[in-house]
Image (cartoon, rainbow, N blue to C red; front, top):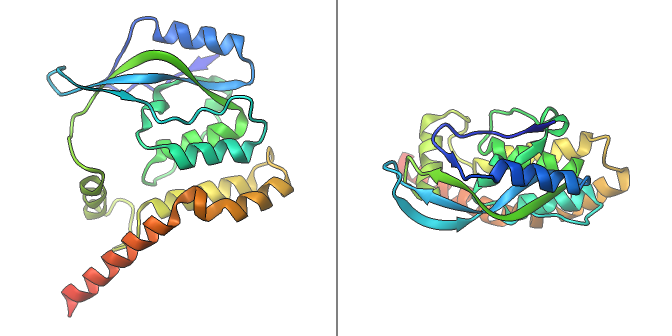
Amino acid sequence: KYFTWLGGHDILVDDYIASSIEHLEKHPDAVLAYPRDAIFVDKNNQKIRDGACSNIESRNNTSPVSRMAVVVSNLVCCTNIHGVFITSVAKKLPFEKVIGPDNLQLAVTAIFGEIHAIPIQGIRRKEIRVETSDERRKRWAKLKVFGGRWGHLYFATNFKQFLIVMKSKEISFFEKIKFCFRLPGVFKWRSCLKQSLFEMFAFLFQRS
């Protein structure tokens, strides 16, 4: 009935799973319960910092599009993916070769129901590779796993999210139209486009 992704290098805090299941049993509209807080440790299990999971909570929200927008707009660190899912929903999640496949899965989760944060420190998350988001994105681009010489790598993820909304049978036509008007703000395309243009001009300058 319940499912969770387990990171091979992460540790679950005592009673985290039991607390999550108890919460889901009491809140039938929720399809995912995640811990509000986490502990980040280094490769030697020494504490680096306490940290809150991204706030993607959507209680008492009956709009699939609004719930999804909350996820896309607020998701930063995807510790939330280690929350406890309703298995029937987890089976519907996409597996795509894009940057942030867990971002995509959490966004799709919101289509099927509410996402709840529970006030516990559920996970000791080990940071194997310490790097900035820009360093990580450049490493991904260098590996060429996701294709493209320039352009913000999250565009592909955003496009998948858009297609899923448009194809979803759970979302009404009217809601899909509203979603289209909200796209630039939800997906933060201005910052993505600015970075993409900067990288394109830098590449052309190097060639000249």
